[in-house]
Image 1 (cartoon, rainbow, N blue to C red):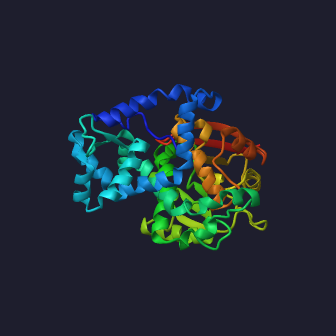
Image 2 (image 1 turned 45 degrees about the vertical axis):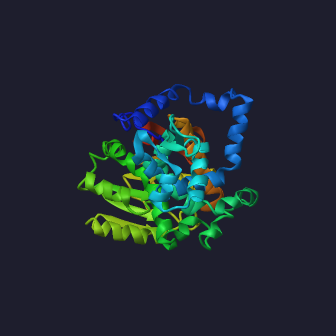
Image 3 (image 1 turned 135 degrees about the vertical axis):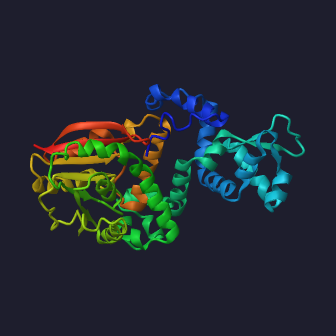
Length: 397
């Protein structure tokens, strides 16, 4: 998840975007210094600690500022700004309500006080942080996912780590893993979960497709296995890209049912089929005959031991000529601290909500888990797509 900006994404003639873009460029060369050096002074370190201590409240305040239209109203006021009383009247929210949210917004840096403001009635303008809370798609996706999927279950994080199971999952439903219940989530929860899932990986598809199909071009009627194919996004993209390819989606029954509907709706029912199974079940064996195997943002749903187990099954089903592709966001291959931070936070979702034992991996540990199953890395493409995914190609030894 997640390289937060492409090089051209925010080079617009806007002071917030332009200033933010060039500020972020300065982080690029020294991102890992953050993990090595502890150069922050004591005063700022204590301030950062308070941000963490009050994070649940500041998160909800940020959502309220966004959802209640306060950030939008401040943004529309532009350089002249707007007062708390004017916000109250405009949005029909009490002075008290606007006041406490605005004050928290000031503390977070999302809102700024106008340089000509009267102390008796503060005049407010939008800060850069407020702009991204309000307008940045990645921030919107992450915030909605955190609220609708993670927030209530996060209080069970410590229990999840102690017990090795997703102790926060019962807040969503009575399942062993979240994947068993994806089709049973509420519509809002589905929107947030799939919005989060697709926002990141789907953006890598346009760059990944030519890399993958370059090696399939000589195959007649190539057959692709999409393991963990979910809603058939990749399978449909493949069929649009190549008129001869056939894709078999291997996933849990709930997901394959959705995939079949989506494939039919896209007019590819004759080229996309599904195989319903639990890849971790000891009795499950993968079918043979694939020219290529694809796993997009799939292996992070399993522990490293489970990754090796799944790849061992794949090893038995493929030939030395079969290319096995893994598309993953690796946190140590990101360009920016914010991107790595998002991935590290996503790992906690896996801990307390998804399954209790997986995470967003580093390059070396995922590579080793796959190679332990009898594969050899042949090619690695990093920074694929605007969110800096890694596309790894393996072959059976």
